[in-house]
Image 1 (cartoon, rainbow, N blue to C red):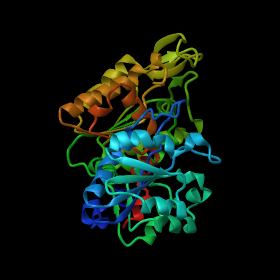
Image 2: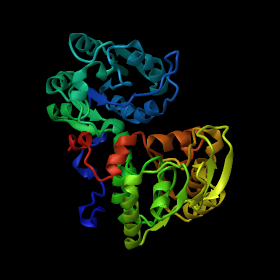
Image 3: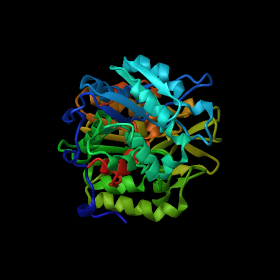
Length: 409
């Protein structure tokens, strides 16, 4: 059921939270929860530094204000203490990017860590070992959080990507600090979402793609009263097409969500939202890059074919809508962009958003696949803001409270 407007959470009130600038950090140890969950290659070298770069302003500000930063993060999903998940692998790249010496200690609580903190010189940074080497981190263990809190005088959360998790380092630890604040990254994420959800400029366009309606229903429900245009693409569009009585061949569909799709289309009309579905599709006779391809009208796909990307007329229509938009939210690809043959729809959307942004529109890109696509096609730096947290951004768009943010209030 679509939520009523009165129940919709629109934004987070950041005036209830302190920023780094408001703290006296002179000669204080500052425990900063960062998100250094970065990809590593086979040689255990960092292949994407964007999350380290995103944390740089907060870390630099702490040092400028006379504080000593102690960084804590997780990396991957270790089952034990496998070396490929050690944050030691991030130290060299972090030193290069942050511009200060980054020291490392192979633990995150206990006397060894306290000794490393005591040895920390001015203008140096200490990076703790992977928090998830301890099961207590994900469990939100109070005792573990208290041990982390003993390491510093001040707590800063700058890890938006984990703010939707009530883990020891993101949420529980905050209660042990009188002085706590949000970092610049966390504030920028909240402010960017607020620009979309409280937009005064019109029209506002949301582009929602991906495989399944079920994974985006909360987002669609919460943004419908906020937007003027809703573009639905990717695999999820076929559930809407089938709900309208169209033939979709072997395309991905959620048969148990047909009524839901009809309800969304009805509510879009009631909210005066123009809902844009693909009008044609690039289909394949197999789910592989070198499959045979053919363009069909979206509702006339033959039985042995599956939709894989937006068709030529759909790309034109979507681009036209984006071109006239002042506020743009992009979450989810328009086709199977991982395969070059079926990447053009997603690439076209990205280019259209970049062009609109250059002409003055505000664009927010979020969600793992759309962020990956923007980076893959060299468009990330042409967007107004690229979110660092897929799951956290989705939950905020759904109107949910994020425990990592609530803990700072």
